Image (cartoon, rainbow, N blue to C red; front, side):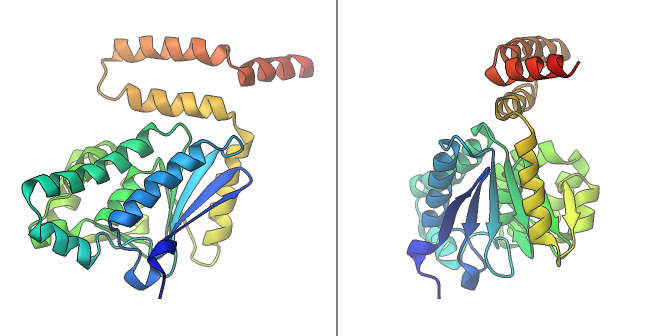
Length: 256
């Protein structure tokens, strides 16, 4: 059995921080402690100068099965105020992931269901093993994947989002990739090596440029075309003044 104090593992491996949900005997189900640990680990990783990307994965056969039984029992007995505070905690995690400057990558094997599927969707990039399964079964018990809706609506087409959220059925890795929920699907045998190689690819990019790009991409959501272009002008100017850009230009000119 996993000690709850070790329910999340955190390490820095050169250019990336690895965050591992470590409750395999409970299929890495989310509870208050795990959500708090996730937030703390993301904040810690963002402060490490050498880290360019954050990788979130799950120990054991599954990525994350959603809320655990004790969390569901707590919800059923909680007051309106208590339920609101609980929901806001998950909202804060999703907001933090969107606001963190560096890319956050989900490495999904096995099942990512309910809140676990929401956690994957909140990442900037989703890498899936061929055996991965995704789904939002909340509606089957009268629950609504409410905060996830804001994210999923931006990941896939409206009709696919509606179907996923209201049918409560699972989809496989290849279908998830086809509809735009997953970026890449790797074989089960080579999954760990492929994921590591992928995240190390960010070593070849400018950390400041990637951070500015992430901020811009999400900031222009909902803007008019003109406002988005104007915001792009501002970011373009900021990027030109960064140390990375100055060094990059100097290096390019030397080669010429």
